[in-house]
Length: 220
Ligand SMILES: NC(=O)c1ccc[n+]([C@@H]2O[C@H](COP(=O)([O-])OP(=O)(O)OC[C@H]3O[C@@H](n4cnc5c(N)ncnc54)[C@H](O)[C@@H]3O)[C@@H](O)[C@H]2O)c1
Ligand SMILES: Nc1nc(=O)c(N)c(NC[C@H](O)[C@H](O)[C@H](O)COP(=O)(O)O)[nH]1
Image (cartoon, rainbow, N blue to C red):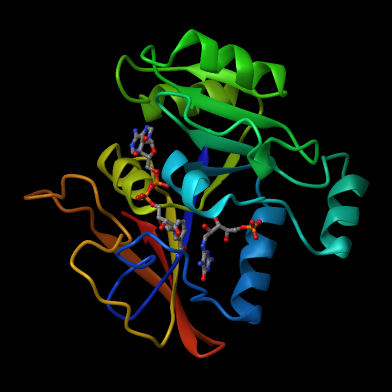
């Protein structure tokens, strides 16, 4: 499976404010680039933190791209996937609508009643891990469902875990020209943090877009 991570940060590396309030960092051209990435993916992954704060849709917005996918025998939008150890995704979350399939990656610690409620509203549940989602195992299960290209859109906890499990193949970051600040504001990679064996990246391109730059890396 090919795993592509995409996010937008401020120049100081933040994904959102210290209150975890969403900030529009990307401009229209960058959101269109994200739409193109979504259109090329079989599934889009976010952490439940992002679902709880942003209530994202994660679908392909461009009608031309939706039509092109349908013409190729694919659903108009990729499947949505949430890393959600304890099944905290609200049952009225936008990404549970009928626009595409939705997978919830949960752990053995997820309460049965929450799982039943979420299955009732159409979610497909994949269990991997005891307390927290075991991402390598969960991604193997997604691959068995036909997901060959996965786009991970954040947030910082999830992106850190993907790096720490060695699962990232490509990273693109839009760096917008603003400073968000805040020692507790989410950054591109949060989690515990590395103290050695830092993942190193191979810078492949630098592109000026909107009022910022897009940096694209492959992992080594
Ligand atoms: N600017 C951007 O590109 C961008 C993108 C996405 C999110 N955001 C922002 O990021 C913030 C949310 O990020 P976050 O870091 O709080 O949450 P997150 O979206 O990374 O979700 C983290 C949660 O996922 C669950 N999870 C399950 N298994 C996990 C695993 N193996 N590893 C890590 N997490 C696992 C846990 O409950 C964890 O708390 C919001 O403020 C949102 O607006 C910004
Ligand atoms: N690329 C990007 N630029 C930003 O400036 C920003 N704030 C996000 N934030 C990620 C956000 O949390 C969601 O994951 C989706 O960007 C929302 O997607 P929808 O429009 O609901 O499909 N992402």
